[in-house]
Length: 246
Image (cartoon, rainbow, N blue to C red; front, side, top):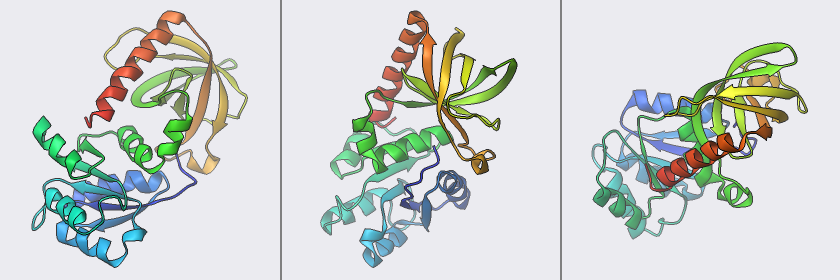
């Protein structure tokens, strides 16, 4: 989940706390982050260097000029398709607001009650859409503990995303490509324990072990049919939710 293909993200929010929280996640994932405290700052940044922004994360409620105002300015000044815009909000927004944002060119709406995995799923989907197209399977964020056994030793890590073909395992334990393991985990909203076997396809550098996104990509080599169906149904539900801007 730590990218080698760094992008510049303009983060616009009047809350210093929120900017700090979100920028820490984005920076740790390998991206460059610039800041704006309100809509006027956003417009100024775009006017200075519109090609210097790869993604705008824009708060809906801001002083001076709010998120709607920024989108309207972008539409009126030929910047609608300059880069994707991901809206963020601290309150529940009705469907009428979501539809208005879409008409103005926003590519998604995300609640501020996010997890790091949800943030990076939304961000990477917008920054690297070709990767989602090239993949034969959807991968969705999840944050659940997972027990994994390598040899005779059992450890506990965290499941950060899952697909029907495998998962990303966050752990400080160094896992080498090719390592075989047994996995035991559950999915949100379901108490059933899934038992599977997998092999490490890739792992992050050892320097990333202490980060939010250090770990390994694991491909399932065995998972029972009923467990695979459960994983598939969970992915379908989450994909619909995220694509709808939830």
